[in-house]
Image (cartoon, rainbow, N blue to C red):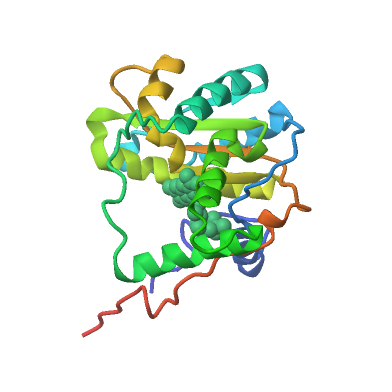
Length: 240
Ligand SMILES: Cc1cc2nc3c(=O)[nH]c(=O)nc-3n(C[C@H](O)[C@H](O)[C@H](O)COP(=O)(O)O)c2cc1C
């Protein structure tokens, strides 16, 4: 009979510790929408990047490239993208955004939206307040750092999927190191501006941003947690 442990990694940790740690990180992580201004030490940022670099990708193409703006560079970028977003101008997505949220997707979108607005005391239907809160995306919610994740045009949707895996691992690594993150497709609405500002090649496509830093735990916007569907609502087991 084959030994199930052949080729298994040697670890100092038991299986319970390993899965426990992963679950803890996944359960703890949430999208941070208020950050403290203090910057993250460079070695911590590099640690996150080193861990996320282990992300799997089709043919190991590793299509993600990352621009991280901090300090004055972040401030210049913030002013530019905030200005464009506030003017109502949209430079366009590199990848088409969701066409429509239907059925259960609409329900989930509304639930998470109302959680955010209720937490902030924004009344239902107050479109001006919704728009003001949406603009906070372009202040990076006060984060000291913003990462732009971009991929290779020729790799198409699977390149973007690889970048999605990278974003997930980036967020988990950051969580393990005591940082907060928020992935932001809102930034990709201004892909042209991003490409020009950061001198990205014509063959690069902006997937999303990640603002990150230390979470402001005292801010009420960070006080709620989103729900998840059950496995029964998600997975179909087929055995016969
Ligand atoms: C690819 C992606 C793009 C997102 N874009 C935004 C965004 O532009 N602005 C925002 O406030 N949240 C954004 N989010 C955060 C989601 O709203 C959030 O992950 C979801 O509601 C689940 O909540 P949680 O992250 O707190 O668990 C994005 C998440 C993902 C994965």
